[in-house]
Image (cartoon, rainbow, N blue to C red; front, side, top):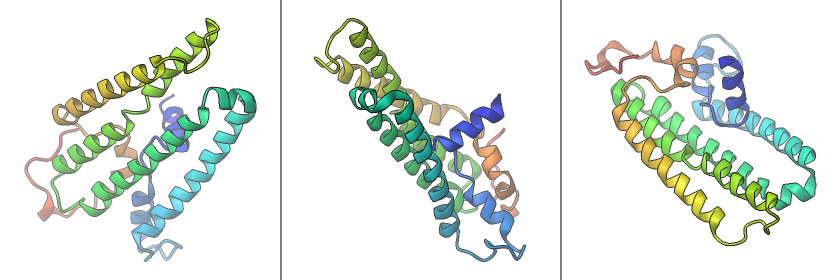
Length: 201
C-alpha cells in the first residue's frame, strides 16, 4: 500500500522528485546523465512527470464529461496541484541540490519541511470546498452561490498552513518521502560538513 501511495504521489506531482538521486547515481557510470548538469536532470524528470500528469488530467475530464468538468471547476484543482508540484520541485532542488553539504542536516530538513508544508497547505482546501459544492448540488442550490465555497476554502487553507508551520518547527525527524528520493545522495555528504546537530531518524 505504501508503494502505491508513493507511486500515486509521484505521478500526481505531490511526491518529491528523484532527479537529484538519479543524477548522483549516474556520475562516473558513462551513461547519458554522466557529467550532465543537475538542472538538466531536474528539467528532464519534470517534463516526464508533467506528461504523466496531463494524461491523468485528460482521463479525469473524460470520466467526468466536459460539462461536469466545467461545472465543478476541476481544471482549477488540477492547476493548483500542478503548480504546487512545480514549487515543491524547486524547494526540493534548492534544499537537497544546492544547500546539501553546505547546511546542517537539521537546517536542510527544516527548510524543506517548512516550504513543502506551506506549498501543500492549499491542497486540502479543494476537497473541503468540493464538499460544499456537493452539498449545493444535492440541495439544488446553484453552484458557487454565496460565499460558502470561498470561506470554507480559505478557512481550511489557513488552518492547514498554520499546522504546517507548527509541524515544521516541532518535528525533528527526516521528512516523509525524502528517504527514498535522497538516500544515495545523503550518503555522499562529506564528513567535514556533518555537524553534531544531525537530524535523528
